Length: 286
Ligand code: PXL
Image 1: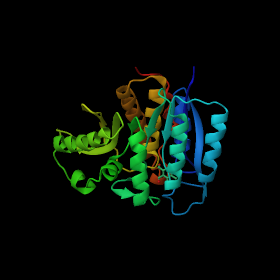
Image 2: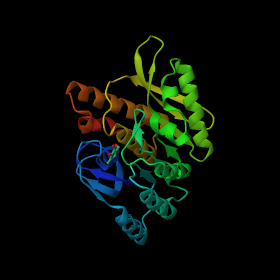
Image 3: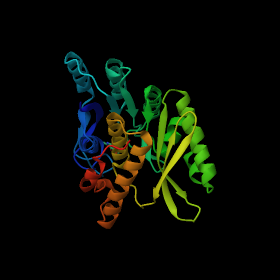
Image 4: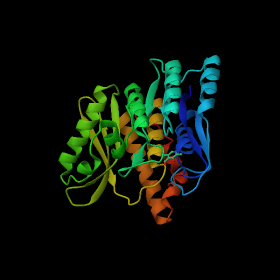
């Protein structure tokens, strides 16, 4: 049976992020995406100008209509949320559909490179912290991990010793695991390998241990890469891949897309050239 994931995220015309990324990745991985749009935007919010049609008031129709239909999801996957009211709607959705055989993946989209996005407020952070406690898997980047755990981003990124860097991040991840989630995947950690080359790491953290997946460093911070990564993880879990194999697969997929985007001089706000590499995601990895 085809697995089904409810995807709660916005639809942005440009930026190759949120639902655009999620629907294409889930489909390529053989998983049905059921989109619940939180907003419809002409382009993601990092562009100098955009128009946003907020869908918060429509979210309850999706919840109640899908409940009436008797729908069941293998996974619920949440991404960018613009307000406390949207997270409150997500809680209602979870109360209805998060059954014991459903996983909840929360991608706590709030910022990148030490900077927070325009919608970020302290009350949104508080509500996101509560949502994270309900999740099975959380996929923060380092900026978001620091926001969620009230850690100092500058102090962490200044660490030159990679053992110290990773054990600090592991400690913060395990702090989050204590409050609920079984797995935290911290994405986009910049570090130096022993031979001095720059690398990018994704750290999988659970209550007992941590494992590092490292990839060559590619310069530039592109829109939507976090969304593409989290979408691979959600679809991989739904189709039965092991979590480590899908982290490896997602990293290889993003590396191909990033290298092509650098080669083609794609502006960072436009997101990465990933479409031609979707075929790489097709085969399940156990
Ligand atoms: O990729 C994260 C994201 C998703 N959706 C919208 C955004 C952003 C990041 O800025 O603006 C609307």
